[in-house]
Length: 470
Ligand SMILES: *Cc1c(COP(=O)(O)O)cnc(C)c1O
Image 1 (spheres, rainbow, N blue to C red):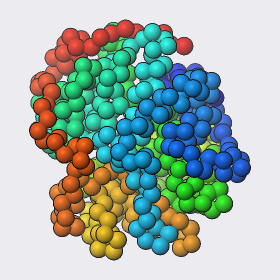
Image 2 (cartoon, rainbow, N blue to C red):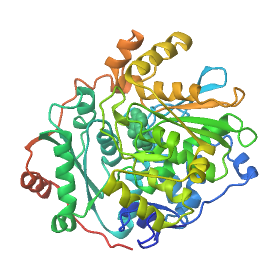
Image 3 (tube, rainbow, N blue to C red):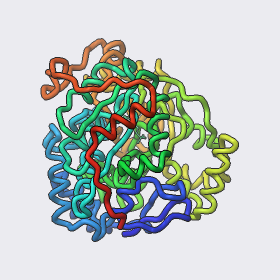
Image 4 (tube, rainbow, N blue to C red):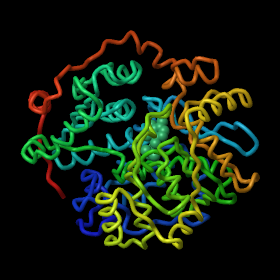
């Protein structure tokens, strides 16, 4: 399988090259050249498989012959062996035809582990074959940093440096990163804000000499392999609820549009998905888009569901590419308008096409608190704020009460103890394997908000060996 850019002007790449490249050279995002499609019989044949085996089969058409099937199966087995639940992504019933898909049994208690546990290992494998090594650099305001670190730790061909704003992330979030003991993991606390951290990372990637010297890389949420990995749990859930014989609706707490777009990919691959609900907080650019066809940037506001406090939903470009019949020139025009004017509108016909599958619903913080309390009262289940938004949106957008509706539980409630306790009156406990998190020693370097200081630190601590591109 080859990958093309949504903007139509970057080289066509195989799976492994798209994995290492991340963003396409024309500023676009890589998507498969055509959608692989499973027949009903093939989907029926996936029922009952273990999670890693399912991942191997579902992702096989995306990987093509870029990675040998046996190698991929071994890597997937290894990636999901670290999850604390035997089903990896278990379903939990919370009402009549209402389910939670628990995606928080990975090492950092959030759904990003599904992609990053796999992608870290895939990077390592591909670099191994090419005899190369890369330096992963990223900034985090809290959650993504720990998932990236856990995905990279102990990998032979990667060093990872994660910048966080000193004193401005929660203690659980900091400790999930700084207590990781691995020679290739480097935490840096910057004396500044998250925006300062992000500006430093951008400046490092913009510094061509430094970028090449350190073989800088990132595996951010636009990486195709992350999307591909996330299609798997849509298959797992739908199969468990009767697919291919029965259609299933999903409701997805959404920020960057990566997770819900993976649901779209599963739908294109033949999985019977009757509806995809975009569940948002007050940062509701996607809900406004579905209501009126206008995609318009607004100020980001801080909410109880911080992982969804995003305005530019990067992966949305991939859906636009489909709505515009895979015409890169149209996508380029829209993205240019977004940059220059802060927004764009699409025509009624394309909006109708989007609405045929997608719906959206938004909750403010008060409604989110009320929903956490309601779910606890009605079903005894304690959910985190992101998940609560997913559950409420699933109910608000329900088409047919006979269709099973699955809300994606994207984070463990213990990641957001204050918000959960205030709403439900119970304090969620960290799972056993993280119970001693507050006693573990921390490893972190304090640095000033200064590009030179950060680059010097990275130069001194990374082991560098470039890799051949292709
Ligand atoms: C990242 C994240 C989301 C948003 O996912 P996207 O793929 O960015 O839409 C939702 N919930 C939690 C807990 C997250 O960490």
